[in-house]
Length: 421
Image 1 (cartoon, helix red, strand yellow):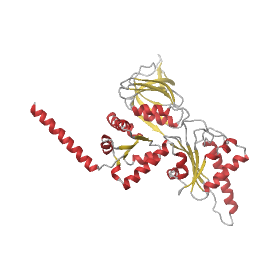
Image 2 (cartoon, rainbow, N blue to C red):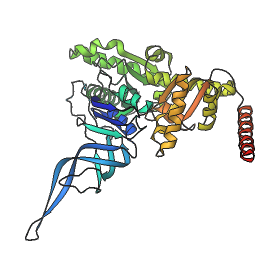
Image 3 (cartoon, rainbow, N blue to C red):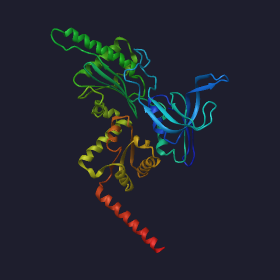
Image 4 (cartoon, rainbow, N blue to C red):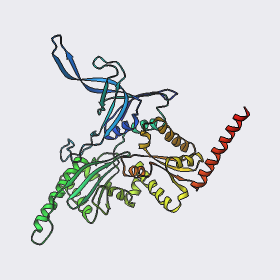
């Protein structure tokens, strides 16, 4: 995403203008735009003109509108298997956006074609500028951090994955905030028996050929940001797939693909379905290579939390109230929090979670904001969306008892002061 303009006041009001370029940018916008913000972007509106004779002329025009946001909707990428627009044999390295963000609200600035206060829905367009205005306090540390992170040059997909079985393959791209399923491929392969061995071999050849064509179309293997190409499968399929890809690259003299040979990692998984990606990313072969990526770090820390919850529960707390108590005591070493919590419709709820994040950072703790578009973020959402690994053990019941005593003491003091007056 490109940062076009930015002006933030001391009270954290102000505006930011950005230009989204791909699906991940759309996801950032969905997380940045909140109810009560004002959005200015290009849109299309149907306008009716009534002539002096009473005839009605209706036409669609493009115009820029400013809306007071009432609702924000996210629609993920187009159905897997949709053509990407690139030719077979050419790597798909261009960033495209198939996800959409729709912003609904009332028109907040006068327009020659639209009345002030009229209700409208804007669909954010790729490569078109979007201006986001927030009132005092709106540009908190989490929102500003997302703007800075999304506008880092050279950002892109870090891992491509093919999860395959005999006759089936799922192509995915993984970036810091998203797992995008690009295509699901299914090619029927007759069973291998003595009378139909040739039919089986022909079916395999069709499968490998289709897989290779899809690979060239969807996997940006020559992109500098791509760290690994994972081929995961049960049994021997991953080896056969890798050998076929390399053989075809040699036969067609595809030098960029041959140069990317060292990016390939073959991993065993128990199932040829896309949910096996979580299992694949935890494998030692990938963990060593991916340890610096954001989503790999999140996955490892979530695993650590669950293991600690089973073995040392006084150092593994979850739930908004309990995590807030641990933060008050400066006990959080690592905070795990889902970006879904920052999309709360109530400003007070969002402010509560932002304060926890800022408190943990100020006290030297690590904060990991999980994307709910990753499997690890979805797992965290099932666990209230917030969890913490503590630096020292705390008993929940003891801490809650101390809180109740402190509140009771405060209440008594207020009553005594009231009686004294």
